[in-house]
Length: 308
Ligand code: SIN
Image (cartoon, rainbow, N blue to C red; front, side, top):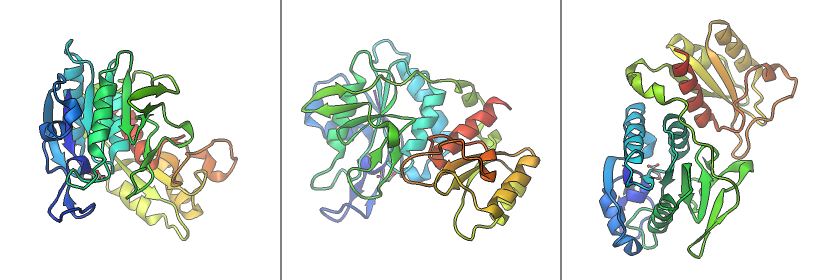
């Protein structure tokens, strides 16, 4: 089952040969499958759930996607589900799906950095790799097939805005490599998630607000305080380095905590998360571990939903 949500993999440019200036999500999922000759004759169903630029991803689409993925996984004849997605927020959707779908069969996300109309698009190979992985017996969990590698959905992060090598799994590294059509498995498939399936029953209008604030030179606490005043029940701080937080922002975060707001401390570094045990004042704030700030926001949102 291939479920399309949009992104550059489904992007179409009007300027011949363009890598930029395209419309993301222009093509339907079936068109993406039809464009890969090696998929001809395979038992594939394709459905376009959305056709958006993933920078516009929203909670309602996440819920619809998680429900659709779970429904298709439950069909005995479905070996696995492929989700085509924009690269920009893929790491967030991957974490959301990990927690809201019990992926006892593979749920393989894939994407592209070049639109489908590019002279040499990366989407068709990524889609072929994703479908092949989704049909492989014994695979489980939410995964990303991209650029010849397979990553755990919860570990993946976008690290480049233009290059084809746009994703890594930070310190964890890939789970597997696709080499000349063969799958070279390096690590065990991820644990099956689904611990927050119940969140899907809560109307998204009632979901708690969780925002991200970045720490930087000359940071102020006023922005964080304004978000709390505007109703934020959770704040993720994209801290500097190993999750350090400017003292002005830290004071605002502590004041927010005192009002019952949950605060998490992530790292704004491109690779790597927060290693605990520093003993600084900011280290008293709970850390987001290896999660990127955007992934930490999803986790905190689901944590708040679970406890509401
Ligand atoms: C998007 O995230 O939808 C656009 C960018 C991309 O897919 O690379």
